[in-house]
Amino acid sequence: MKVSEISRALEEIAPLNLQEPYDNSGLLIGESDREVRKALITLDLTEEVMEEAVREECGLIIAHHPMIFKGIKRITGANLTERLIVQAIQNNIAVYAIHTNLDNAAQGVNKMLAEKLGLQNTRVLQQAKSALRKLVVFCPVAHLAPVRSAMFAAGAGQIGNYSDCSFNISGTGSFKALAGSDPFVGEQGKLHEEDEIRIETVVPDYRLPGVVGAMIAAHPYEEVAYDVYPLSNSDPTSGAGMIGEVKNNQNATDFLTRVKQVLGTPFLRHSPLINQKVKKIAICGGSGSFLIHVAARAGADIFLSADIKYHDFFEYRGKMTIVDAGHFETEQFTKELLFDILKEKFPNFALRISGVDTNPVSFL
Image (cartoon, rainbow, N blue to C red; front, top):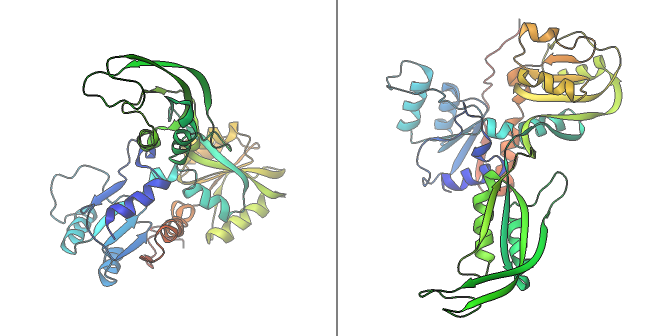
């Protein structure tokens, strides 16, 4: 199987457009048209993981955290990143990273964590901004259904928990086919008027090329008239963090005890526990302190994430409990998530979840 086929499958769930500006997701090493027979999935790429990939004859490593974040001026093996680059090239191993784009995907890291913690009625905590476009196209009345269906199938028309959303207006289009044209209706050199439908629908910007391509392929006209408008609306289908509800109201101690069991961690760092039953739980796998205020405004009783700074724990005392459950711990299920995504898409392709524990933090 080609690396590009695997990349496309992952980017259907977590398009590269969803990654943060500082990130470096995507294919980092190797050619996209390279054929591979086996892939290794890991949270972090370490030398031990690279050795595992070589030993297991994996031609592709899929890591959550990118091994290359900063510019590289030389490759001499002086640090871990340089050594990994050399080893990957020497062993003909491609490396693909899927980081904040998977964090920001609706069915990504936080959705998996929410399911493991048993949260219900989940939604994106901080919706992505300026991620929507309005697509408008004009087509003959008789071709409304196939054109609109093609757009929906390609990812247009999703608003919250509703799909196939559009607005349609009847009108009259006019055009004159010039020399060299092959008009679907009308004749060259003559002004033609046609009963048409104006179709309006919303499209996430990362799906726009695919939706436009599908729309043009289904449209009968030789030249398709369409417009794309930027929207300032938030995109409810993508963004940072997630918020949901526990099944039964319980006290904070009981919920955090369950968190420890699910994450397999001996300790949780937290601010004072709120003295009430908890219902709303906000989460963010990995570093999520930037969402503390968002979680509070959303009415969360507990905000669970990682890499919380000392002074952050002073926020919202008595109103919301802030919990640091560990970076690795809150992202550990990402390997399982990636395995499930690819196994469903390519059931006969050889996939392996790395057996290396890459958590760099230990407890004494």
